[in-house]
Amino acid sequence: MIKDFFYKLKNEHKFLFSALVISAVLSIASCIYCLIYLYTDKYYGFIFLIPTLVMLFINYIAIYLYKYIPKLTKFITFILNIFIIVIVQILIGMFLLCLTEFINWDYIHDKPQYYQKVLSDYPKERIAHFPNEIPKEAKNVEMNADIFSFFGGQTIVLKFDIDRQYIENELKKYKFKSKENFYHYVFSAMITGDNIKINKDDYTLYVISGDFDRFGKNYGIGVNKDFNQIIYYYSNPD
Image 1 (spheres, rainbow, N blue to C red):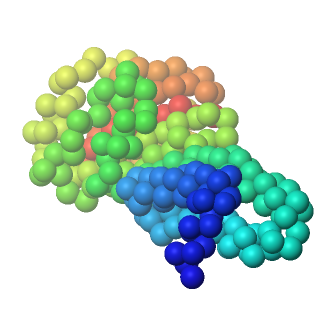
Image 2: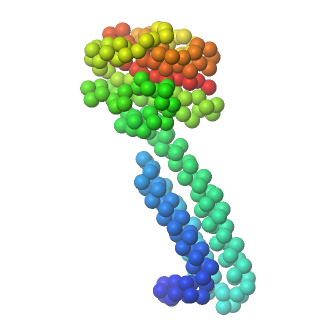
Image 3: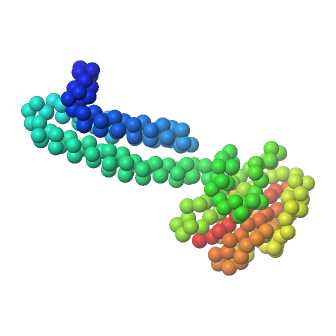
């Protein structure tokens, strides 16, 4: 029965067969993309298989109806197949694939294991002071990042506990524009997130570069009084 269906589809209804092949390619490619690219909720990719299954059902019914109402069947199936491919799979499908970027970001933005991936989404000149990799000896690593601000702001903060020597070596690498604290209004709104626990009274911020107006872009290093905890930050408030 299935074999006869595909035989008729391929030999007697070439348009429907071609449309089904195109739909299947789009569905499978989108599904595989999600299975490979999505960090979480990979089952989301199977949604892209639904249009092809719907088209398969429509074309199955169409072959049965064709012998009774051929002209109307041709017209309706043409419209439905084009609609599924162009509107559902290409236009809506592209939107959903773009949405995967937000889904991924929402999942990885506060997970240190994705640190390098998160860091790659920021301007290189503003995060050059961040370590290329989180030091192996770092403890209690916490991270929070935000690039999807409504007005285009960006923030990333990386914090961990480490020995005094490491921190002193980091501070020796740069000439700092100024020393500030979190209660300077430029830094008071810095996004740290619930997952980053910082005693703001205990920190000195060493500003490598930045402006101190309302929308000042700043980046630098923060160190606590005991020199056993460090943060790297880049703040571009909106």
